[in-house]
Amino acid sequence: MTSLIRHVTVDCADPYKLASFWAQVFDTTVHPEAEPGDGEVGLIDSQLLFIQVPESKSVKNRVHIDLQPQDRTRDEEVERLLAIGAALVADFRKSDGTGWAVLADPEGNEFCVERSRGERGQG
Image 1: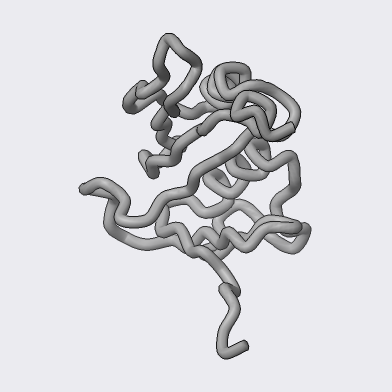
Image 2: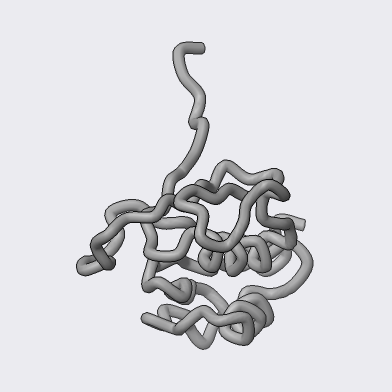
């Protein structure tokens, strides 16, 4: 094997605050050595790394995260994420249960919530 993904890095204004949001998404914690004001913050058991940059987000992400809920439905997960600070960007959910929702984290980075394995008939 030639390479592995070490991190998926998210540029942001406040790494600790954004890492704290994503820690809630993944039910994990911010790295224990991280503190508010740090320019680089990671999560426990995740390859996501949040790095402080001076510029704000101005265009759509070229790479984004697709989430698949493990212990709830897609719609339940969307509601949970909205309650912890995500925003609904676009709704592609269909009346037959297919589709996905596009959300944004507190700094505007888009991500999608897809159907769970159970909703896809995969157990």
